[in-house]
Structures are given as C-alpha cells and as structure tokens.
Image (cartoon, rainbow, N blue to C red; front, side, top):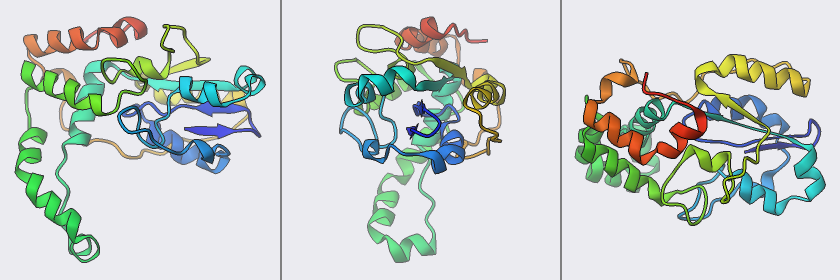
Length: 227
C-alpha cells in the first residue's frame, strides 16, 4: 500500500496486477509506513486491504483521499500467481554463504515446486489446490478464499475505492490516475512472472470452468470472461 498525505491518495496492492511496478514508482511518496505490517492468515505485508485501512484512518482522510486499486482477468491472474508462488528458489553461492537455512529449505521443496511450476495445462485438482493454498492469506477475515474483490469491496459488498484500474489497460489507466493526482510518472516493468504462452493455453474445458466457479465473485464483479 502507498499512502500520500501530500497528494491525498491511497494505492492498495492487489497482488499480481502490476502492483510491484506501481509501488516502485510511488514509494518515494509513501507516508503510511505504520500500515506496513501483516496479519497471519489474513493478509501479507504490503497487501493490507481497504477495509482495514478505513478502520484505522480518520473519516476526513478516508473520504477526501483518492483510493485506487488494479484488478486482472482471473484466469490470467491465476497463471501469474501460480508461476510466482511455486517457482523454485535458485541455489546460488551467495545464498549458500548468507542463508544456508534457506538453501536447505529450497532443496527440501525443490522437486515439489518444480513439478508444480512446470504445469503446461492445469487440472481441476490444480485449481482446487491453489484455491485452498491461497486461504493462508484471505485479504479479509471471514471470507472463504483469496479474491481480488477483497481489495475493492467491504464485507457487506460495498465498493469502498474510487477507481478500479485493469491490468490489461495498465498504462492507460495509470495515466488517468497520474493526471488526476497531478503527477508525471512512467511505470517501470517489475516483478513479472515469466511465461511463454497466453493464459488461455494453460486451461482445458474442465479447469477453465472450475476456476470460473471458485472465483465467480471476481468474474462477476469485474466483468471478465475467459477470452
């Protein structure tokens, strides 16, 4: 999350939507370091959702600051998240010298992660595995999974941000935000998950439909289709 009192905005970091690039170019404006913490089982550091920040801020700040977030096609978001989460840790001499414990963990999990990472077509079981694994970080308490909607809506289903940008139109939508805030910023390309084919190629008919079922909330809220 990036909070700027000078420019009166709050950017919420919904993972795998270009958020690292946005954070990188806005971080010098960050004045909300007190919110840089995690809550185990709800959200990871930097991924604090709007509803939690709203509860911590004076009403005058919340109502007068421009609040924005980005979302992504759920099937594309899934592939990016899978490739990021299950990428095996590279074993380097520097890592061996500075963090041997991490090296031991990397060796222990390397075969399993390599097997997951190398998926060419996801199965129904893969979709369910990722959904259940994602429950380690829900974004909001009391929800049954990790949804992008958790960064746009509160627990009652009320939209609580002012602007929802789309990863598919990242540069265009961010330029709209920049102009509104009076900023001149070019987005860097940062922290991308490397893959060689379009996200549609990773799904068969059954896994495509399974994802549509489990993440129907995001599909409906943001108007996405598989194509």
